Length: 111
Length: 112
Image 1 (tube, rainbow over the protein chains, first blue to last red):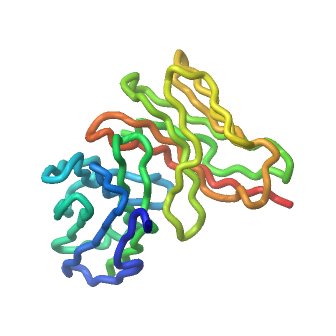
Image 2: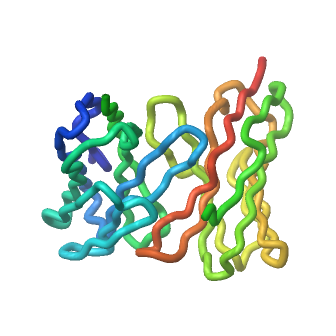
């Protein structure tokens, strides 16, 4: 039982490049979330998926897209990376929106 | 805007002392208030949580105090240990998809 897994762990991109961050959970949770963490800012919600087949914007969705591939997987895509997207990205999952379980994070640098 | 305000930003406590971190919120629709602990290079991990119908919850050395009328809640770490040195985030559940609204975090250092 791995919980929430994220790939890759680290990534460096040049401005304008694209990439997809992958997230998978093995807890059969309905809800999944993408947050970004910046120094002194806490965690801010980018997108969430309340259930398989649905996605919706969070607090900071600009520059990102998501796909809920199936119940287990929820990916985050940066179509044209910008230096402002340098951050640590966390995926989380939850059965009911109460206890949320976080992955280990992806550290992204955009130069 | 920041829906959950957390203080202090950083805290230094001696081993054996009490660490206290405070949070305040405005949205009375919030219905669940967790605290997360995060070590460097790791994801946040749920530490303890409370619902608004309870004024206090204790788990080992960690206690949440909740004041519904003041819209404030706090984390108390009794007998603080160097291993407690981490960043602590308060949060509140509500709004979009029942996502968590996080405070900005408190960096706790417990000195030997």
